[in-house]
Structure formats: structure tokens, C-alpha cells
Figure 1 (cartoon, rainbow, N blue to C red):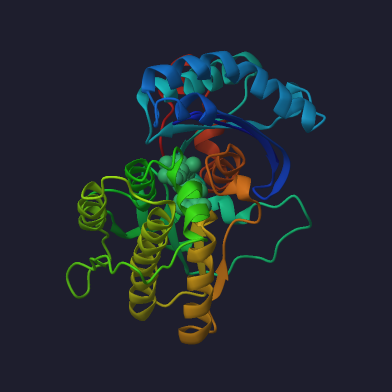
Figure 2: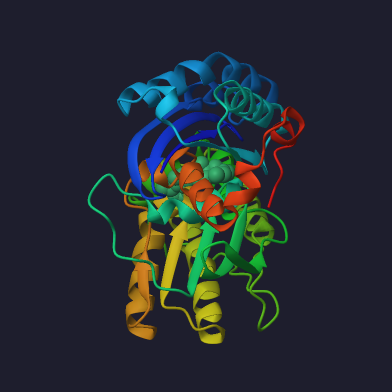
Amino acid sequence: MLILGIESSCDETAAAVVADGWQVKSNVIASQIALHAETGGVVPEVAAREHVIKIIPVIDKALKDANLIFEQIDAIGVTYGPGLLSSLVTGTTTASTLALIYNKPLIAVNHIYGHIYSNWLTFGSRPDAVKFPVLVLTVSGGHNELVLMRNYEEFEVLGRTRDDSAGEAFDKVARMLGLGYPGGPAISKSAQKGDSKRFNFPRVMLEKDSLDFSFSGLKTAVLYLVRDQAKPSKSFLNHVAASFQEAVTDILTEKVLRALRRYQAAEMHLAGGVSANLRLRQKLAEKLSKNFPNCKFKYPEDFNFCTDNAAMIAAAAFFKFQKYPQSFREWKNIEAKARLMDL
Ligand code: KG4
Ligand code: ZN
């Protein structure tokens, strides 16, 4: 089954074609990073206007790269939220219009569940079947969750952030350090030259058994340290970046270990923009092989599957369609298609 995925929830306009929920036929991403670097963050109005310009060329390229014409697509999957409303409107309106014109099923996808399915994607041969239950740590700029998946489309949220997400903390700290946008890659690069033990930032773990996250205390600790420096040296900034990255990855890793002590899981998947962080991958790999050797650790195969993309949305749409096929096939009238019913 061929699904065209469309994603426009934040600052990437993306379209992709994925077969059967795993095989990526094309993955096109028009990034707005250069545009938002000027302002040091996403300005919703600017992002929305850029989506309007890019959405059709991006979809067109995704079909061409896959060597397909629209009639050969079986269904359309689109992100309906969470995200910036003015950005989401472009993707959902385009998707519902195309679904109407070509009479295709339209499957609305939750962006976070999209990230969860990013570990299913490959450009290569068919991956091994996933073994459930799967514990997923999904960490982005906009969200930060621990989710237990007992089967396809069966999600239980075990913990979430009480303030910022880890990605947001990376972005804000990078801004404090003058490292630019987006913060995650900038901090990782700077951290490579720094000493991660130079500053002992707080690792807020909340109540003893809590699987929730909090990063605001850590962010404030960095702010207090940095604001007292009149002219911070390059090496000072590198040490702060390294020590901050160490604290964030310690918190994320400890929460995963806590969850695995409580819930049995055959696999542990890392997803979302922060899954691109090499230190986090390394730390999780070490701790899991030591403490839970039977739990298979996975992160997205391609760096483009970590940050926002439409291939993950097409994959999530596929599994949703498998579970509720009739609901989408029966969508014959305009109102039902336009309502983007969430199942
Ligand atoms: O999933 P994503 O593209 O967008 C949201 O759904 O929010 O994630 C973007 C986030 C940003 O906060 C960015 O700083 C972070 O992912 N990120 C990273 C790295 N690459 C991107 N954080 C840490 N290390 C990285 N290498
Ligand atoms: Zn995302």
C-alpha cells in the first residue's frame, strides 16, 4: 500500500511516499532553518507563509522521486497536530483537497505518533519485525514523552514534560550561549570541544518513581552561570555546552531506566529531533546493554528520520489505516474528509 505523507506542523514543509509502513520511496524536506536562523527561532507567521510557497513543489517532487503519479497513491496521511496552527492549516487543507479531487482515503496523524513510527522506516531491505512491548522515548523541540506501545496503535503515555521539552532546552541554552539556531546540533558540536565535568548542573528527577521530565531548573542554572560572564571565552562556552548536554542526557537516560525497571519491554526506541544526539544514543546504548541486555535498542536509521519529516507520517498513517480500514474507506462525502476525523 502506497501512502503519500504530508507534514507542515512547524518549520519543515515535507512530503514522502512510503510503501506498507516501512519502505521509503521518497522523502522530500524543505527546511526553513536558514530563514529562522535570522531571528534565532521560529516566527509562526513567517513559517506559515513559507509552507504556502513550498507545499505543492514539495509534494510534486515526492511523487517524481518515487516515480509515481497521483493516481497510483492509495491514501494520504497528514499531520493534524500538535503544532503551530497556521502551519498545520497548509498541510491539512492541501491534503484534504487532494483527497477530495482524487477520491483517496485521508488519514489524520498525530505528529508525536508519527515520530514513534520513524523507527520503522528504511531505504533498504525489510527490517526485522518489531517485538512488542516497545518503550519509546520521543524527544523533540515541542514534546517530550515516554510511551509504552503494547502493539501497533496501542499507546500508553507513561510520562511527559512538566515544563520544557529537552529539545526546547537545547534551543534556549544555545541561544544563551550565542551558538545559533537550531540549538541541538550547535550544542553537540560545541560540546565535542568541552569538558562535560567542568560544571555540575542539576539533574532534576522529580518524585522517586516519577516518569515525568523537567528541564526548567537546568535551564535556569545555565542562565545564572552565563549571565555573570562579561566576555565568555570560546572554551568556557564549550565547557558549558558539554556539561549541559551531559545533564540533559543523564536525565533522559535515567527516566528510560526507571521505566524499564517498572515495565517489561522487548525493545526500546529513541525518536524525535533529539534522537539525532550522538551522546544520548551512546549513553542509552551503554546503559541498556549493561542493565537490560535483552532489550533491543533502536534509533532512526537516517538522520532525516529524526527531525520532522513526512515519511514518519506516512508510516503512522499506514498502521492507523490497518487498524480502522472501514472508517477511512467509508469517507465518501466532503464534510467527513474535511473534518479529518481522529481515531
Ligand atoms: O522533531 P523536531 O524536528 O521538531 C519538533 O517536533 O519539535 O525536533 C527539533 C528539535 C530541536 O529542538 C533541535 O534543537 C533538536 O530537535 N535537535 C537536537 C539535535 N538535532 C536536533 N537536539 C540535540 N542534539 C541534536 N543533535
Ligand atoms: Zn517533530
